[in-house]
Amino acid sequence: MVDFIVRVEDLRVWFPVARSFIDVLRGRAKLYVHAVDGVSFFVREGETYCLAGESGCGKTTTGRTIIRLTPPENVVSGRVLFKPKKEVYEYIATHVPEAIVEEEGAVDVYRVPSKYIKPLRREMQMIFQDPFGSLDPRLRVRDILEEPLIIHNMGEGHEERLERVIKALELVKLTPPEEFIERYPHQLSGGQRQRVAIARALILNPRFIVSDEPVSMLDVSIRAEILEILDELRRKFKLAQVFITHDLALARYVCDRIGVMYLGRIVEEGPVDDIIENPLHPYTRALVAAIPEPDPENRKKLRELRIKGEVPSAVHIPAGCRFRPRCVAFDENAWVQERCRAEEPELIEVEPGHRVACWLYSKA
Ligand SMILES: Nc1ncnc2c1ncn2[C@@H]1O[C@H](COP(=O)(O)OP(=O)(O)O)[C@@H](O)[C@H]1O
Ligand code: SF4
Ligand SMILES: [Mg+2]
Picture 1 (cartoon, protein in one colour):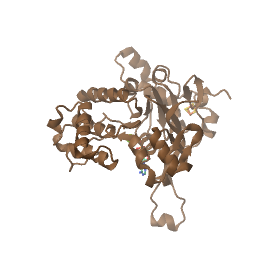
Picture 2: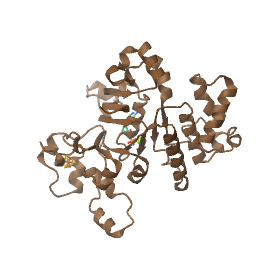
Picture 3: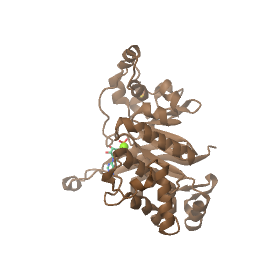
Picture 4: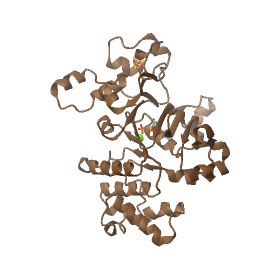
C-alpha cells in the first residue's frame, strides 16, 4: 500500500455548457466540458508530482479540485483523499465522521461540508500562475500575509503575527523584510510578487501545495531563482507538491514523477527521467520531441514526430482513444488499430511505476 499524502481516484470534473433559450425550448441535450475525465494518481510526502500537457487538458482544474476550490456540483465522480496533520484529522473525525476513510487514515475532501473545511484548507495551499492577479492590489504585503493568519486564528495577537510575517518574507528571500512589508503589489516586480504569493501559501505551514505554472509568466532571467526558493522550502518543510507545467524540460528539473494529461485524462505516468528518456505513448513522444534540442542531428530525427492539428473540444470527446484523431494525423503508418476507434485504453503498467494508456502496449 502506498503511503500517500494526496490520492486522486477516478476524478471527473465537468462544467455545463450554457444553453440558449432555443436549446432549452427544443429540448436539446445538456452538454458538458469534460475538463477532468477519469484521473487517478497519488503524491507521497516530500514528493513533487508533475501534471503536464498542452493548454486546456485539465491541469488547473485537477489542481483546483484537489484543494477543494471546485464547486462540489461539478465533481461528478471520483474522490480526493488527503492525510492531514493529526489534530486536523481528529477535528474532522469528531465533526464529520462520514468524511473519514479509516482504512487509509485519510479524509475524503469532498465529503467535508464548507462549514468544517477551514482547518483542511490551511493544510492545502495553491500558488497561482499570475502573481499579480492572485494578490489583492489594495493590500500591503504585511496585510496580504497577515490575513491568512487572522482567518485561521494563528499567532497570539498582532505582534506575534508580525513576527511570522517577517519570518515568511525572510524565507522567500525578500530581505531586509522592512523594505518590502509596507509595499503594495504594484510596487513589486513580477518575481517579488510571486515570492509574496509563495510566502502567503507557506505561512500557514501546509502539508501539500499545488503550484500552477508558477514561473510561466515571469521573465526567464528570474525563473531559476523562484524555482530554487520553491524547491528549498519544499525540502525544508517536507511538502508534497503537485507542480503544473506545459514545459517538459522544466518538469524534468522540478519533479520526481510526472503524469502526462491529454483531454482530461492521464495518458502516461512514471518517474520523470523514464518518461523523458523512454516515452511510450504517441502523445508523450510528440511532446518530448518538441523539447528544444541543441544537437542538429537529434533535431532532425525528432522533427519526424511533430504532432499536427489542434486539441479537440473537451465537449465532444472522440470515441475510443481520445488521442486517435491526432495520432492518425501525426503518424501515417499503422499505429492506429481498429480497437483505437472502439475502446478507450486504460493505464497499464509496462515497467515498474511506468504506466501508459495506449493499445500499442496492451497484451490483452
Ligand atoms: N469554470 C469553468 N467553466 C467552464 N469550463 C471550464 C472551467 N474551468 C475550466 N474549463 C474548461 O476545462 C478545460 C480544462 O481547463 P484547464 O483545467 O484550465 O486546463 P489547463 O490548466 O490544462 O490549461 C478547458 O476546456 C477549459 O476551457
Ligand atoms: S490507443 Fe491507438 S490511437 Fe490511441 S494513442 Fe495508442 S495507437 Fe494512437
Ligand atoms: Mg492551467
